Length: 73
Figure 1: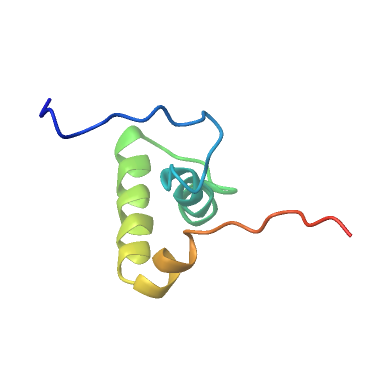
Figure 2: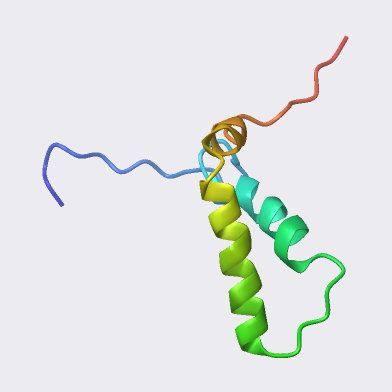
């Protein structure tokens, strides 16, 4: 590790710092919800299809960054 880089420990539940947590619900909804898969290859094919659908929509990817937070009154 280079001397000029400092590692920071991330909190375990920090979706803003772990963007894959925002992508998993999209993938579940678009590839796995209410489906019965016949084989492992079917799972891979539908997952790839959902992933390609996502990456072809940059505005959707950008919108996944911040999550809504609860606000007190």
